[in-house]
Length: 541
Ligand code: NA7
Picture: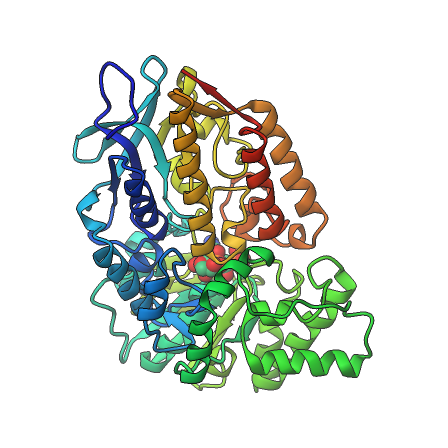
């Protein structure tokens, strides 16, 4: 059954771009509504982020019992996570299992990149083109393209002359890389660098870490899954899943803080931080007090606690000081979880190179030269330099809405969306966890499911209204963007040069992209919009 009324019947009801967690759940959900769907995926398998980011040490920073789909209570009970935090291999295994268990692969076309997507006003349908020369039409188009899907390697002079091999953490070779006996340089100390450095250090003969900005990292305290904890969690799964919506990050089970960091004595405060440090995990740590992300003075206490931990761990005082972040409040950039990151700098063959003071000048055939004239001889370079986050992938596809308007032009000064789900001027195109939604600031799978459910309902609503077209109004979009900015401005997030802000990509507009008002108020807003007859959206025949 299709919901189309156009004379030239679209081939599909819904074109889905991407077969990561969002795309897979969209197939499942929309198929249940009797819709004809197909996902187009660039990789040769499902998994999205977990398919591409195969660097050593890659691990999720949300606990595995929480970082999972919630749509199937049976799946919740059946799946066994071996560790507290899932590593890349385990999560990919899980996503593959979900694809097989719910027979999702038959609606995925792999090894296919979408190059353009164009809305046709007369038929109210989307036409997408693939890199294989195919043309597909569909009533709706869902961008399930992820937020960290466009790896970026900086444009450093001389890279082509390098005689060794280079890698990007986000495009890691599927059969792994053996660094045994090699002199390795890692550029970048975000999550990917911090997670991979201890592993690369285990193999490399010499490891040079080129750090421009120090980041805060906490011990994950990862461990094999505690059988009792798993049993208790599984018993309470339905309750915990439904409670997730009443939490700021979409993760239940953490008692919310009740006090300001400035309300308690220094001794009590540090005892709380110490307990959280030992417990492990970023949510738990940021939940120490109510105001760590809104009050700089409160935040300073947590930042200094972690800096002191770094100073205690790293034996060389100069290296320790370089590793102490001092340009942003803790938590305003993605708070990293690591295993033995700071300890790695006590190994005699690991050296931290400060490229803030002496930037990389060029890559030579033999290695890296910095501006102080130092040359580091290298056999391999790892770029842990991140992604054109949140908007990169949308801008890489030539997306054209009404009047030929391209998303690239529309977003030239930063993303503009309504609820992070639709863009005015781009009817029938939905985004899953788009900019200005909580996506990256929440348990991602929770947010993917919430968006897909919302989109599925919207599609049903359009059909029930005998309409063919739904679009966000420019007024609703403008108000949402203003609200998003206002919420961000009321927090400390805007103080950091983060990828949330587009600050890691030269020339990218500096606009704070995620919605940081919390999952609870966001979901409430999405529900209110529906209750008010899709307020801010226009339906037409
Ligand atoms: P991030 O968090 O964007 O980190 C990238 C790192 O690379 C960061 O330390 C950057 O330093 C550094 N970088 C970027 N460009 C350069 C150049 N040109 N020279 C030197 N250093 C550079 O990416 P990740 O992949 O680690 O993590 C992304 C997310 O994935 C993470 O937050 C989790 O959500 C999962 P900078 O800070 O810009 O000075």
